[in-house]
Length: 437
Image (cartoon, rainbow, N blue to C red; front, side, top):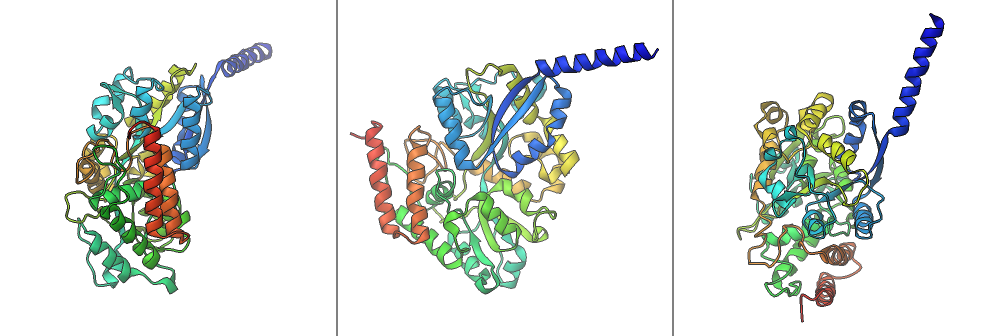
């Protein structure tokens, strides 16, 4: 009997070793945002269900991630089988034939459940080319206790003038409380995401209908001047180094009266395990100037599969799992409904458990639905995209302009110098790209 047991154990071990030897490893490049870190912590559930697929993670800061995945896919480097990419890259890369279409996802994945605003930005010629992990717009997150102490009330739809008034009233620099925290770190998806959306509400635009850059106009001057005034008078020190994660940490520590940023941050700032001010956070729509456009953006972090990967089926299996309703329920079971990835599925916003747990849900959905990537500015534009311009050249141009504006925030150049440089470098790149004669 002992010999039989030993033989059975040996056979089982041999099968396990064989399965391990046959397991396919897929490499996933992702961003170091809280929702992605959480996903990595839950992937034991995936590997239990799919022992033939092993996961290898490459987790990077946002600007570095964009640079690495763009280089890899453009050169057909083949380093990654799944890439975390955004609403900007998907349609451009799909046109280039760089992404695998996701038209054959499992029926229970339920493509029709995706929010139209999100799915539309990830589609090309009727095909979906990336699966949204979470979707977002931007909104105002503010300290209700500090607003009350200042004798002010935050409207649901504030103006920029009201934001400035509130920032001034809440600032207590001696107590290390700053009225407003905004992105200052250079990058087309960092400070320029915020500033491009802000500029839309000021009547500014990146280009006119002939693709002429518009940084020499009054609307951009007003945008940058007001941004610098807010940050220099009521913002934290060293703001030119602050992106999403840095401002999140400041807000959670109670150092920001207001923060205008991604709606996805709402679950983090209201989580009592991480946020000292979790029970004091209110929400409002991104500000406007009465011109018909609010300063909010539209974005989705998505999982895309590079064309040419030798592990397409395994990659699709993982992407379907990570962006499914089942994954949402897994997060809810482990972390609570307030912490599930938001902004991608209609069913989530019909879920009473979620609506009860997430006081920010209604404002998030309203912000996402209000963003119009086809008509982002007050005046007509030749491009799509709210906080970006959906052309291949924008990644380089946007980051270069962001460096000028970050330098202005750091005080090494004036607003006038930054705008002049932004105009010149953008015009030069647009001529090089053939947009201008």
